[in-house]
Image 1 (tube, helix red, strand yellow):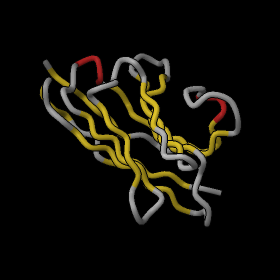
Image 2 (spheres, one colour):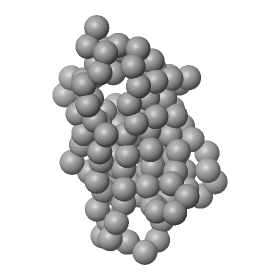
Image 3 (cartoon, helix red, strand yellow):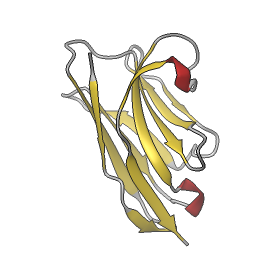
Length: 123
């Protein structure tokens, strides 16, 4: 059983940056995926994913070039560096792990979820 803890959410001005963290605990093995989702208007959408098996990253089109997901070199954790933030990026951001099957952006296929961290971007 794995627990996920997100942090780093804050309120910033448009054009600013934030770095979100998601730390996993409770399991001795690394997950196959750790992925960030966000829920701006009661619809959860995939943002970025890190594949621990091959190091490949995946991004939603809306954040490509602005957001970067990376892994921690020691702990089972991922970071989401968010630059050039826009008001449309405002949302609760959730971390998910352990993709059961299917595509990285399918929220229904993730086993573990964190509680979320709020990001608010003002214009």
